[in-house]
Structure formats: structure tokens, C-alpha cells
Image (cartoon, rainbow, N blue to C red; front, top):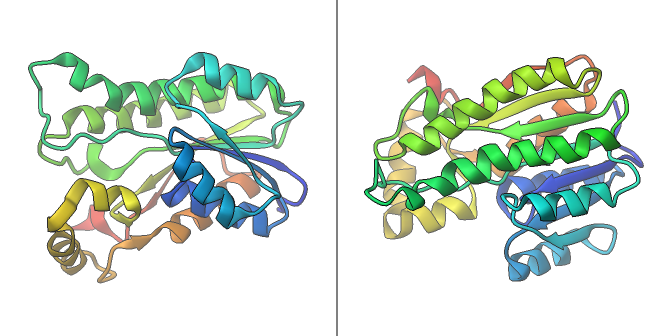
Length: 238
């Protein structure tokens, strides 16, 4: 149950939960590769991770790019894909193109990651997807995002059978304090965080490192397969 000298790829690892996972894996002695769409964010992440990590500019929804990256690697032990697009307030927008990123990044990005990483893995390897609590506790205006979370969870359960003995699991975070919510909530951030904190049984929103700790558990425990691990401070109970 160690990641020492194992190769860990974090797709969407330039900030938030992905970056926290990359840091945690490095601390355990893993060889880490992170990806992200923004070169500036990747450079900032690399400065935190140090020279032992590799950073690659990549959009998770880019099949050709994902294929090129993963097929070029001689071996992969674990993959974690955090990439997802969130569009609150879109509802069923008149322009379908505005709705596509939520599904294309999370679901199709997960599919590309699994498709091209699995041939590089051996028994004991793992793939971890990321969903969210919104398909069980819907958020107004985020129906497509909710659907993408449900799709990823169903996909992972099927892949756990199809790709055996490679393990496939899903992490399901709740309200986590990451740069993503800063951008989404803007000037309303503090008020919304305070409101959510009051609702949660633990009395606060989550931290990225708490989700990262759960992701590493899914990577290291060889008897955990085909599950959805919820890390939400009890949000689904309220």
C-alpha cells in the first residue's frame, strides 16, 4: 500500500484537488505527471511541486492529445482525472454548444483517459474518476453537469468489470474550497460558503487535501474496486 516509485498521472492537476493529489503522491515517493489547459497555471503548479514532477499542457477533452501523452509513456500505475466544466445557470440554454463542455470534459475526458491509459497498466493499477454530489442533490441550472457526474459513475462501475484486474473507482466530492469556486461564485463567495458551512454537519466546507487523501486511498488499496467514495462533510444527509 505504497506509491513509492509508481507512476501517477493527474489529468487536471494544475490546481485544486488535482494539485493537492499530485503533492500527496509526490510526498509518498511517486513519479508524478500533471496536465492542465493553462500554461500559466501549470507553471505555478510546477513551482510548488518541484523538479520531480512533469507538467504537460493538455485539454482533457482533446482525444488526440490525451492519446499522444499516455501512449508515449512506457508504463502507468495510476491515473486520476479531475477535469470537469461547470456552467451554473445555463439550464437548457438555447445554444446547445454552451452545454456540451460539461459532458465533453468530464465524461469524454474520462473515457479518453481510460482508453489510452489502460493498455499501459498491469494488475494493481488503478483509474480514478471524479464526479460530484449534484446528480444526487441537484443544483438549479446545472442539469448537464449533474448528468455528467452520473454518467461518470455508471461508466466507472462498468469499466471495473471490463478492465479487471485494473481497478476503477470514482471520488465524489462535495463543496470543496478550491480556486474553481472562487471563479464561479465571485463576489458572493463568502456569503455562499458561510451558508453552506452552516448546513453541513461538520460545520465547514472541505479542503482539497482532504479529497486528495481519499484519492490516494483508492490508488493504494488493492481490494477497493468499482466504488464511489463520497467526501462531502455529510452534505447528502442534509
